[in-house]
Length: 111
Length: 116
Image (cartoon, rainbow over all chains, first blue to last red; front, side, top):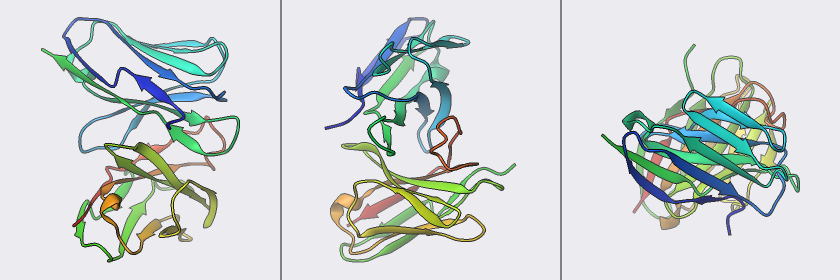
């Protein structure tokens, strides 16, 4: 059982479409991070959300942290082929000190 | 500034053997964390070292061990390899002890271990 469940697991969309990736848990997190990993490389941090209800925008990417700090979402507007990759949420649950990664969402944007 | 480097990038071993992976963090970073990534289990935390001391450990058997040297370089060792140990092993460095959650982790490209 994974502490952080992501959905969908796989996503294949056309260039220009919008999409949302979800990260859910039954545990409370002090903060959540989103990473993107491309083939042959390690994950790269995109954003850290700290406050319940917080919304952060990075160009076409919008990140939201749930009010109860148990869930988060990543919304991409007008997806581009360069957005292709594995998206991972991650964080430290309030119940301990271990860093958990989500199950991952593999995104493919078709030109 | 050079990024996190991991050696070797690829490794093939047979069951029962042991393996040592190396990680050189970004200059000035004192925290090194190790992760295992597999298609079935995703990314899982192995352990974190800070100032040569193991600060956190994930749920892995004792066959998985590590250490950190005074220059912050870290090694990870897996003894008595099993088929299920085949995975991408990622190392990440950060400036501070990662318990400071706002500190950014920088990942290396990983070592792809195949156990036959």
